[in-house]
Length: 286
Image (cartoon, rainbow, N blue to C red):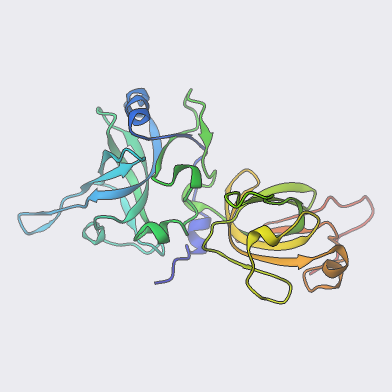
């Protein structure tokens, strides 16, 4: 099954949010801070899928576990749009236990009950969930986000909500992974800005010859092309990484653009971020 999210979703209205870590004991404290009517977004695993009522149809509610403590939240979906892994509309009874979902809605009279307006499957198991734009290595068991406007000040989640954008970045590595094998973040300077790339273990990383390599072989000062999902302010979770090489190799490569010598960033929505243009000059056309 193809796990790409369609471009139409990338144009969806985003939610600017702040994230509350849901764990075993932290979850209880976080739930207590939620207020009725508060808008939230969450990522979790289905522990009790909608069940048939009198053999007629599936009930429009289910339970989702969040955090290492697997704390259950009940999602009420009477008016919710339900989307499948590829963004297609599905029925409530297509949701099954152990699927990973992302949902948006409002807190009900019980902080563990959420009336959701949209639910989307983002993974059928742990491996496919890691490939979704909503996976966070620091909250791999899920999380709950309080939508901007709350007085809570926690950790930012993807600013585009359901519409996380695909990006392609060509830039120069300003900070590599270092000597620690557990470190998988690198920083890249492109178009006058610095981007942080998270590189999951399962993604493909290639050298200049197209041979697979480790992310730890990419060093500061080298040029790279990265493809992935924009998951925050100048933060990308990579899905593919290509090492281009030295300054000379970059200028001789097909990735080089004379009008954008400091690299460039392109989003799936068609927008583009380039290096600042000097007065009286224009970037070369593509």
